[in-house]
Image (cartoon, rainbow, N blue to C red; front, side):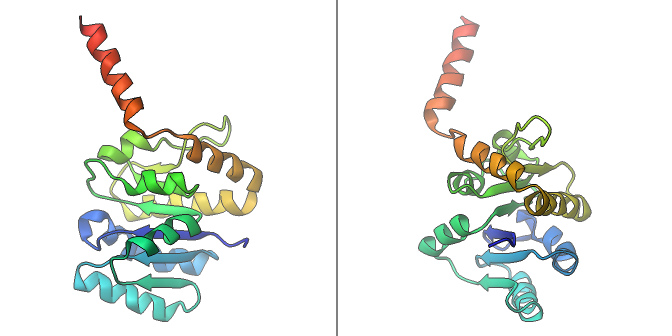
Length: 187
């Protein structure tokens, strides 16, 4: 119960940021007590990498190479953090789904990920996740390690972040109001 779980539910494709993950996930697992869970299918090389990763870290890595909507909900709900390091992401739904379950998103600042997830500031309590700017594996690793540290060392701060994550309203009514405000200003 006191060990952080990082999940990914995605199509396994390099543009989804898996090339970043494959560069640093072993370092993260070796240097922290993180557990990693992955659900998805895709490029053979990535499937092979993660299958072997699960073999190297038994009990710490769980890989399910399948598309399973029911199981995906369990991954979202059972994790503490949700990783989306996409190279590009026009909208992105997974970060919003994970938020509904109180699973803190860690995203790369691109497209819809940048629009929906705002970097957590532990000093004023604002923000609803973690983000990194550059498409760089070590920048991603640094943010993941920061999130793990916050989870492990400051549980009261983490609990506040989870509340922030769950309070965000991603519904169309919010977007529609913004569009109406813009159109009203243009008149």
